[in-house]
Image: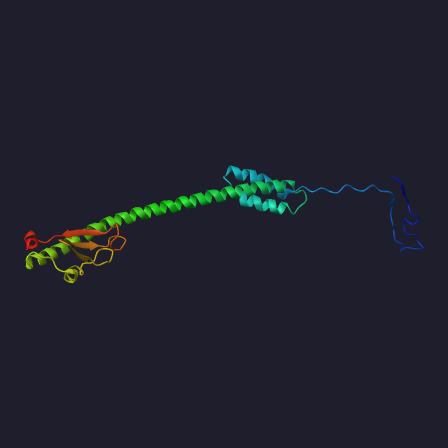
Length: 208
């Protein structure tokens, strides 16, 4: 290695304030750049692989470490950790969505079963009301030579009965008979879940 020493290496007594320059190298080879180990990327990569064994539970933390590692020198391990961590995060999201959907389905099934049990009790109560309204119509029939009341009169008899769903019973005269109707669980008349009891006039009244 070639070098030379300047004349004034040391301060002399005559010039005590003269600066000391030291040895000056000529054609000095460049030093290799110092390499730093990317611990953030390394830890993120290792944790990302470990997170796959835990169904991705540690993937968010591994992804955070990998993203920090991407801002440091030596981004290879950090990039691998980021990709594996994203797979783990996707796995967590899939498991979470599946579990949430199953929970919602289970909750809806339980609620439907509970509603069915409640409606079964209410249907029994509604049938009892229909029987009471039927008795009133039979009493009316006995007081009017076996004939049933007309539309308005019949509804006045049964309107005081309110079914368990909060709807008043309805009287519907038909040709040769009459119906007492409850709207049922859906609270809508003339639907498939209506509860009906048929009332007929006495045969002798029909003969007249």
